[in-house]
Amino acid sequence: MESFLMKALQLVVALVILVTVHELGHYLFARLFGIKVNRFYLFFNPGFSLLKWNPMQGTLQIVSRSDDHAWKTLRVGRARTPRPDGRPSWRDTVYGLGWLPLGGYCDIAGMVDETKSTKDLASEPQPWEFRTKAAWKRLLVMVAGVLFNFLLAIAIYIGIALHWGDRVVPYSAMTEGMDFTEAMHRAGLRDGDVLLALNGAPIDPRDATAGWDFIQPGARLTVLRDHRDTIGITIGDDVLAELVAANVPYMSMRVPVMVDGLQGGEGAARAGLREGDRIVAVDADTTPSLTEFFPALQAAAGTTASMAIVRDGRLTRVPVDVSEGGKIGILLRSPDKIYPVEEVRYGLFEAVPRGCKAGVDQLTTYVSSLRLIFTKEGAKSVGGFGTLGSLFPTSWNWYSFWQITAFLSVILAFMNIIPIPALDGGYTLFLLVEIITRRKPSERFIELANMVGMGLLLLLLVYANLNDIYRLILR
Image (cartoon, rainbow, N blue to C red; front, side, top):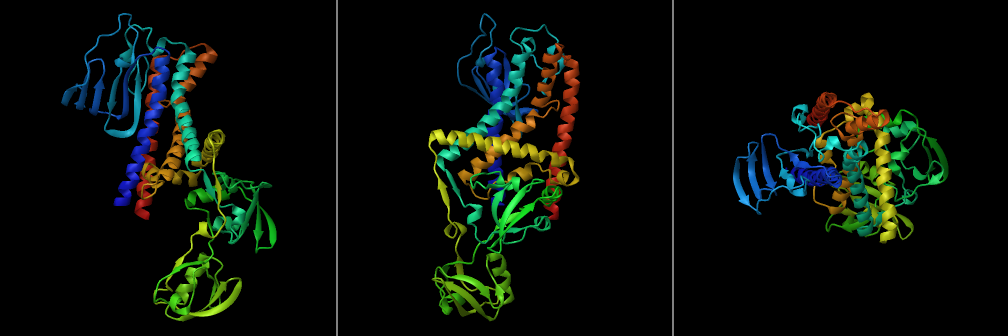
């Protein structure tokens, strides 16, 4: 329960940041072009708001109903009157916090959106309304939210590069190679293969999207097999869809069995094992990595096993008592203490291009993966809030939090620009048509299109979260 709450907390904090930045983009560009913004809300507020601040009235309402009846009203400033010239200011906007954490909205005057219908625009158009502005200005207002989300992702990646830098293990330095799933085995890879090159070029260990590129149809992998043979493998067209449907990591690092500490009185300590020893065999079973070691220990449970130990470059055999539970009382050395780690530090002028590249790479990777949604396997992998929450670790880690938040910001940016009515992309499509044809779609048409788009989005939301529930039940 505690891990669930921690994941939920991180997801909510990330959504607060992402939604606020997205709506801030719309707000700032609307204000830049002299458009009045009626309301600026984090989260939706059907029926009532948790908080509502009206700078023009100088009031802060706590738990306020839609009829403005509030549980508590505080005076936070003096009441003001509108400008004599009618020009809007930031004080004309009501700022609020809703109770339904499914997004947020920026209620722009003179625009048909999820907050208004054509009936609300029956009055004479005003110069400070969205509908009276030039098409290119309206277009910039609509794409500003997407732009701000993408810029936020880049800013986060720049900050990560500046603060943490990169700490990576090159694939070629993982001397025991990788373990692969059955789909990758059918593609021609074997457990223990060491990844050397992708499409003829060495793999940059700092490239966060390299793992995705490995499984693209037609990708050419060069691997070292059995520590001696260089093999070329081309990934087939069916591998990607199969891996997405399985929804599990398709490869994992193989870690040598290195002793990092001993538990007094246990089999390993009694046998004289030392810190730094490497166990390469248990009885007749070779154990080049933990993948083989754990099953071999279980097979030898309750016996005295003959273990092959490499110490100071020499191989020796040692009898070790294995407990009934398949334990010998050792602490295992972590991969970063075994394999060479490259630490890369960045100054500001190096972090900026690094962050920009990371943002563009994540966007490119995500866009290329979307085609899988239209396959049977891809549809099964669609997830809702449960899937998003599962991305976060069970304990708070700032590095992981910012990495995932940046990734979600990229997702939010792209998903909003898809040309579906009710999304920013739908409005953008209508505006592009208007700019090209010089004919503005009617507000009634936009209203009906938004209703259809909103219906589709709600169905997708329900489907995605039902997928989460289904996977939870099966687990």
